[in-house]
Image 1 (cartoon, helix red, strand yellow):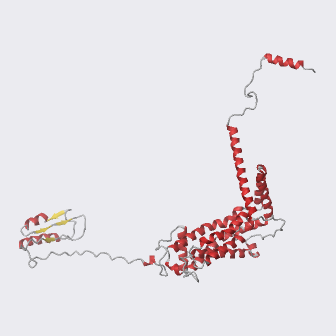
Image 2 (tube, one colour):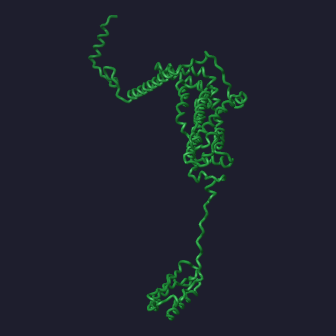
Image 3 (cartoon, one colour):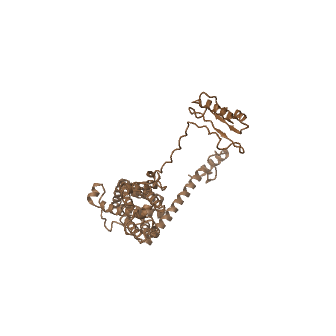
Length: 428
């Protein structure tokens, strides 16, 4: 027993003298078979593997594992296991959660930690509202109103262009109305030439006075993507919901994530929208529309009222703010000094005889339907004429004479003599 342990200690001492593994051969197995043979009777097994490819510049470790069989070895006479100077490094400590990334400066969960935000249009709106809410330390209703005013100020140059064009259309409305009536009469009569002539005169008059119809639609087209982004952004924050928005309202609508319990915001939104349509805030006045479109726009607030009643209060806060801003904007642009500063012409008050008589809803609807039907008939007639013209040019030649003029017809001498005799027989 003592001899076997002495042999093991000698092997371990020789290997431990090697401070680095560069001097050892690669994949050297030491003492696996030799130790098993020498201590077979005492049932000791020691296997040592030293690799020169891994753990360079580290001392070798000898592991001796005693295997106890029966009662041949007891705890009292068992020799202590060899130790090594190598102590493995402790595992790294777990990192603390990054609270700075999940909470904003107000101690609320950030928009990004809730899965909102991003670089989509609605995500940019959500991040901008959070920046206003945290940076200015204002409640959510204040952040929504401030953001709405900032967005409307960005669209203000387009409003100036639209108002300039609206003033031109109003001042030249009598002449333009007469030209439109000529176009309608020509379409009703089916005279294509008269209709083209009336259309050319109408376009030439507009170009001469700098009137462009698309300028009246600049503001609605510019505000449409802004409204859609704000709609989806605020609806996403309310449906999640953002917990701080439950107390981010004011007065009777303290919770911005639910509809207004008193229906005050939906009614106010519909009323201001109707007023906007009537005064023509964005450059399209109600009196300049066709009767069908005018009454359709006036009926829109009553149609949308049942739907917007279920919208979250945060969304209606934005909608009410933008409507109020539009009304204040039109009052500001009606000041003569302001109109002169921005190059907007003053509105001319036309006489009653100069403007055509306004038609009722039923009559206007009938005329609109008749014009649409005549326009479709006129287009169908032009299409058929084009098909016939193409068919006549590409198809076979229509025979309208008794012989083919492309072929030379030979005349016999007897026929020539008969013709001469007939001419001579005629009396002079």
